[in-house]
Image 1 (tube, rainbow, N blue to C red):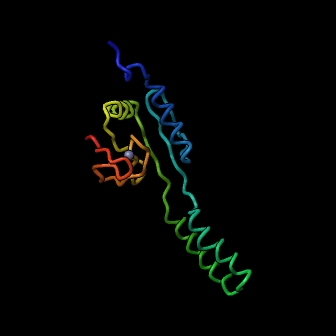
Image 2: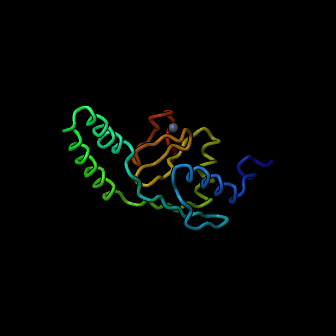
Image 3: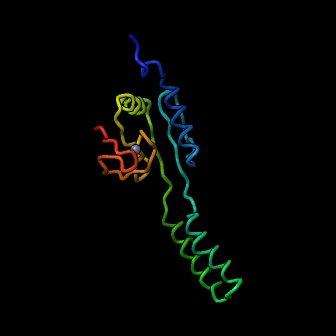
Length: 142
Ligand SMILES: [Zn+2]
């Protein structure tokens, strides 16, 4: 009897992972049938730009001294950008298959995602040290 997991090829697992990651801003560096290497370039903090730059500039239309706050905010967001690092990831089909297998068994696993991790069951961001998902409550295997 064949199970679901054996029907999914390494290539398909890798393609699925690439599909998931590219929607999150990851770029494929190199790819084989069994592995994929990705990188995620530094990104500006959209929240920071909105909150500390766009908002004070808008309010500055009514109260001009706030334009100064927008300039400070821009410096703040620039420093934040410079402190960010490009993330890299190396994923093998074996890892993805293990995740897939435990997923079918009703468990979740942590998928390393830069300095943090993701829950394989719901995709929510979790701490790398977490032993259960704060979003869906599943316990992490391994
Ligand atoms: Zn979850």
